[in-house]
Length: 364
Ligand SMILES: Cc1ncc(COP(=O)(O)O)c(C=O)c1O
Image (tube, rainbow, N blue to C red; front, side):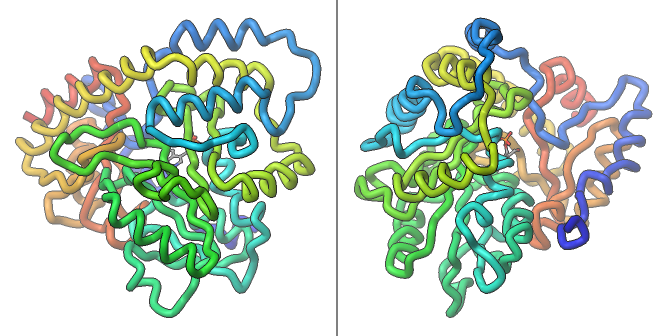
């Protein structure tokens, strides 16, 4: 099976990592995008308080968790009309993305459309199901094909691009006419930086879907918004029929979120204060890194939202990776995310303030 999957891209960064690690003041790792800030006390307390639960968790999530998911999507993102049966916890959103085509019963004849520059797991999930992958950013690029599943990712990993309301409406309308499922990966939805750019919107927002969730799945993660990457905490919300189908298969497959993590998710979803504080940490790091990269000769494309800066010196991305690694800064080459990324690097905002300050000093 592994031979049918793409090369695990991070393995190709070993040399650059060793080079960056040799810097006398230590490496600044802006490559993977793993959260570094401590989990908020309110969440840790909830995890601990649920630590003695002896029984199996429910695959569907506790009623309290399902209610907290719906309430948080409404309060934070203006999503309306979500009932308890329209949400489902997942063991981190990567797990859901890797198995979604399989859970939906897709196979060899089916096409999964992914963005030209995309989080690699969309393709992995399609290949695990034996389905075809088509990279396309517009409906015209799809040509005559009708994908069974269309991925959207706004704000985008890796580019930070935000899709406007008209773009989202067009894709949804097109998909509805043809019976395609739209899976919208919204794990960076709360990280909009640019007041001039379109506001990041959920596909479940009434201005996008007119309050009709048919055929739509919004995928969310608490990894970045609440620094819960280590807990493995995500959820999917949308069309109740699709969610019921996912639930039915996941029950058989034992895809359950552990009880203490479900309790921690409730605490995280009910509390906006720690989430705001986390957003502001990333904003400060972005405000420091963006001008420093420009001063070092990089152009920043898109990047109006999300957790990354999409940077280029108009040279092959591996040259930029090496140039930065000689300064002790490790970033991800754009070609990890698709051929269109061959001349960009992705710079994550996920390093401690002291490390970000070190990177800024080395760049300026
Ligand atoms: C676009 C995108 N989707 C999903 C994920 C998976 O996140 P998690 O599995 O931690 O919820 C990531 C992680 O970096 C991501 O960038």
